[in-house]
Picture 1: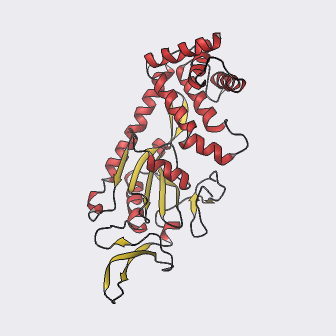
Picture 2: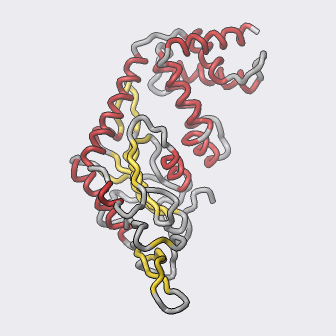
Picture 3: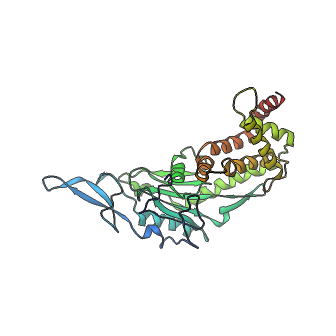
Amino acid sequence: MAHKISNIDRQEGLRQAWHGLTVVRDSIPANANWLTEWDVEKRRMINPDGTESDYCRVTCTDDPSIYVAPPVQHDTYSLISNKQFLEMVQDCLTTVAGAKIATVGSVCERGRIFASVSIPEQAEFKAAGREFRAYLNFINSHDKSSPFVVNASNVCVVCNNTFSYNLADQRNKVFRVSVKHTKFAHNKLENVDQMIDAYAGANARFKAIMDTLDAQPMPVKQACQFFTGLVAPEGERLSTRTTNRIERLVSLFIHGAGNRGETRADAFSAVTDLYTHGTSDTDRQKQMESSEFGSGQDMKTRALDVLSDESELNAITTRGQKLLAV
């Protein structure tokens, strides 16, 4: 159960997620969703002599028997409650007219909570004539497993896997803010307006990169060399499996959605298409894991880096040319 949506958790969304457990809703208000049906609070523990302990339990308001964390230090560990969490999400919705919650929920027996917000101007923005989806993800934990984090990402949080991906995305050069659960955590939370501005700017930068790639021609022969150098493992000969993958990439380069088989943007879209949808026909979870935070995601990141760097592209295509010659 990699999604870790237990019987006391729920994920609500505007569309069904990969795990098939989404409670699909037409809209998700910040003041009426799964996280408003319960909250967390600290309850002092009692020492053997009957005095109050310096430690407390984090329990659920709808059922105090649900402990969502190991004992925490009462005065130094700061809870960010569901109510406070959703207030920050609401501020985001209020800042930009038409912004909406795409998904919200809890995992790990309520130890982790999340909300992914899409913004009309950014939710399906066009770059190089193609549509890309992106989200401003709010994630938080009650079980000490995560700080409060907001990041810009193309990975919408719908389960523990996607939560963990966004949590681990510490090298995010686009936008990320993190606040630990310390005594003064609430004073350190960033201004939501600044978060939205940074998020919009991040998508603008990605759009600029894609538009630049779309203006750079790439003949089919060069694309084939690029794909070969990119995906072929170290060695002197191409295996049948690798050859089939290269042929599939070339096909997507020419015939993939929105592609013309003419530019570097077409090459990147071919890699994105294959490693998002086409590397695991029989295992839906395995495909999602690879695409969003495994080898598939690594390959997509590598492809964009290479296509944006002339010397790297020359090195990769030269390697591909030699492998094809063999």
